Length: 523
Ligand code: HEM
Image (cartoon, rainbow, N blue to C red; front, side, top):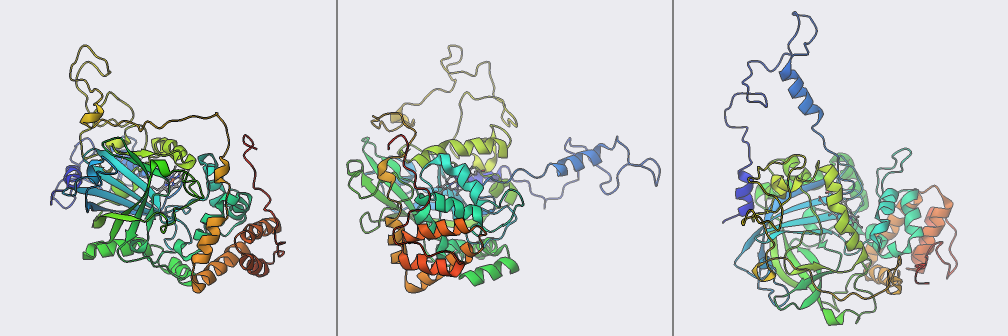
């Protein structure tokens, strides 16, 4: 089967198994590679030893910064196959032509830990997919939980500072067993829903092959007639959803920190290819306000009974990477990588993400040309008037490099929409400029309660135990009391039992958490 990405990557492959003499990076064949150049048999190494200097310098610079979040990950290649045309909803070529197979690259990750941390920790898992479509790359940069901790991107640095190990001693490595994490949760009650997912068995998956994936945000699909639907993206694993139990997860973390990446790698090597079906929840543009929550709020899911998930295609991961660094480490996902027929919503978390990814990749991947790294290149041609920059790998011919150009008729020019050029959806915007939050985002607890009540008794037991374990590690009484006060808004018995287990006061029936700040601009 034709796979344009595989063919493209093969052009960059260097095969060390082929017999070749050892040279320097300048192509000079070397007669010796084990001994540095010395002044006398037992003398000092000479500065003129260019071979030693080149080899050591390259080694000294082998590491690049790890991702600021989602540092630990594992990737694999695959394909996406659409079941039937979605032309009623979108003009995206890869979602309208079922005869096409689209190459994909997926990177799974934990969020909090460093590159060398363990796989089976209690954490959210990243589930990022790059579709190499004929119209450019579309990245679905999701998680294995359908909602998020915060509603506005401006809080993300605060959230991550609270989640990462505490700065004075870099303890603890665990995602959620410390004061700063629970302080943040208690101070930001919008996190109530997500923290229930985080304390549930969903945060300790059995295998990466047994996780759901969610785009989390509301996006838009636009068809060829310009009609729009709001959409949420889902991945449904063919193997079903399975979790570890906490004790098992901790033992595995000690005995085999690579448990998940090894499981994925070995399954693919054996030909036991993991599969997910892509699902869409669709809401027509005119139904935006028909729900008892705001569909732009990323702490809310769309109940599947109200908005069913339409299964539209299948992804199969069928090839391991050839080189972890070149592919998994250097891949650059971005929720802003879209194709014609897919657009954003005004979800304030998504809007901020649209800035953050390229910005961080500029320093992580060393300048503005990281789209030229093989794993990041689209399979369709790309050309524009951008030039130069660190690590430029292309040689642009000609005298000119600007648009509106009378000297060169072939200079890259915008492409009209009817020939495939991307046009933004013309959403009507009307409002005051404010720094605030819509009142429609203020119900923090209803879906947290729904989630907790939807769990079976043993799942609720696991969640209660997780809360007592994680909160029990906090040192601050105030942090514990405030976290329990938050739980009190979700379930009385849950709050009482946790309070007892961690030695916190039982909260009054209707006590407030210390911060549920109103938007100053709206109050
Ligand atoms: C990675 C920012 C929320 C999913 C990252 C990275 C940054 C970032 C800076 C590192 C990227 C890199 O170095 O290549 C943010 C900000 C957020 C946010 C500012 C909120 C305002 C989310 C949400 C999701 C998510 C809600 C899930 C829907 C991911 C994933 C990765 C990632 C999966 C890892 C991508 C990979 O495997 O390379 N994020 N993030 N993030 N983020 Fe977010």
